[in-house]
Length: 440
Image (cartoon, rainbow, N blue to C red; front, side):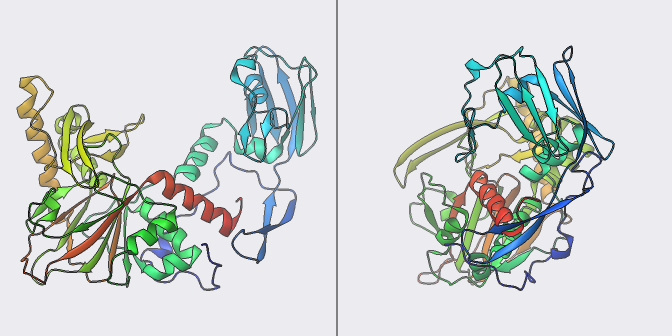
């Protein structure tokens, strides 16, 4: 399904020239003394292209039994330490590693955590470790350098793997756009779409056919869609006996979708098949940006929303019958205190609230302060989707809403929606990066 890359690059993504390239850090791959050119073939095109692979040059290797580690000195003046146990655990020989699956074969129960080294042999591009049982492990210099335990190298590696950098925004944002068909047909455009979705959190795809089935094509582009109790795709229309407040013509306040699940969908795809004639404007806000504002303006409110678990519920019948219960903090932080996920939908916030009674009022006060910040003109974007627009956004970060609209028989607003998971989207992004650029 992957098509070859046109020579022209993407030219219709706003902020295109502001896509950040990862800078080389102090402990990143050293300035090479030599390079090798490899022929890399993409599996979905007959075209080959060359990639220059810098070689990290080893100057000296030392083994320290007391610290149980090997120190590699590089030609750029830096050095890296590798514990014995880590080296033995990551032996790349066929007995210990299945290269066809890129998976470890050595069972953890067979690993001697107090292992020592009998001998270390090095060249400028490889080290060989002889263990007491005469087993030999060989490690390429580039492989070792990219796995250095130095803090700067680890930080760069994590950024490359997970694209953790975010560009916060308010109402000044000009929503990035791309052609729907080019995302499907052009690997570079698809790569930029997913990368922008990760960094900015939202992208509008234009000129999709105004008929059902288009979000399913985006799901195939990523890998597959996420099935929920509302089906693989779902129709957002004004429905009699609606089993979801979205299936009415009323206002939808800012929210993330599906906090009633313990792991809500990471990405949402909304395709406008028919806009409302009157009303129905879409609203979006960067939940991370506003959460950081709350942290500065009202630390107590921020502490409450990052510590109290809130009950969410959803029940009914759609794809099948369902009865969901979950608990979330409104604002989730990682181990460094960075905002990583927003969980809020006022419609499915349960009346059951598992907190001491004295925390009820402080919670509502904190939540109201957070929502008031979202609706400030400098934070909120309001626009009307056109037929053929597909709004794609990070459901863990972007809160979205809708203004009420006039629904008439035969002229009702119609959107088709679907979900995808960040695991699958990041997998596709990495595969596209490898296909387009190789191992940089």
